[in-house]
Length: 186
Image 1 (cartoon, helix red, strand yellow):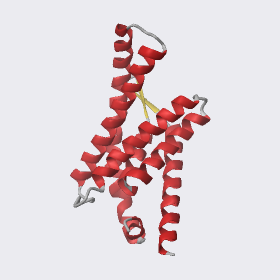
Image 2: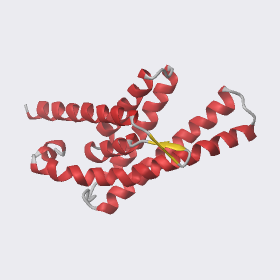
Image 3: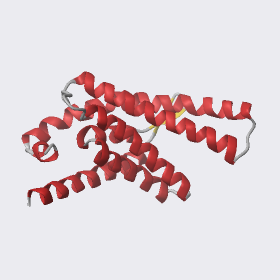
Image 4: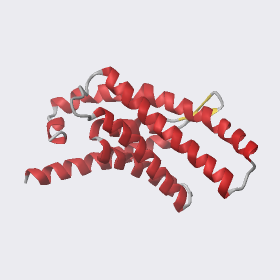
């Protein structure tokens, strides 16, 4: 029975955070020639709260569903799932490492930075592969395209790195007071 409760609680949190990722992706605002949204912050929050695999599933599912419902093809949806999963997974690994003091601010910032940079690196790799090998652009055009995508990606990563630890430390007291954490950490 205890294992069943753990599975149900984990599934509920994965579903709730995936839904949050999806909804937050809908709201974007312009900043310095880019559009900033806090979906990456929620992806990082999923990794912080749930750990590598459940957090990765929440981040990947929410982002992939957004892409699927907004007309992206299967390959792009799959790439989104993998890259967002990886972002939350890296963040979750650092937050839940053996002996880690999870509630320290420096741990949350380190995990957020590593997760966000993982996503930026994977996004830039995708951009390079698609532009160079799928679309057949010359190398100089690929470089210009990558540079134009790097700056907005870093702006979004910076926003996520600032917001995710704030969100994490805002929800932790409620999760602790409600006794939810002891069931998630079992």
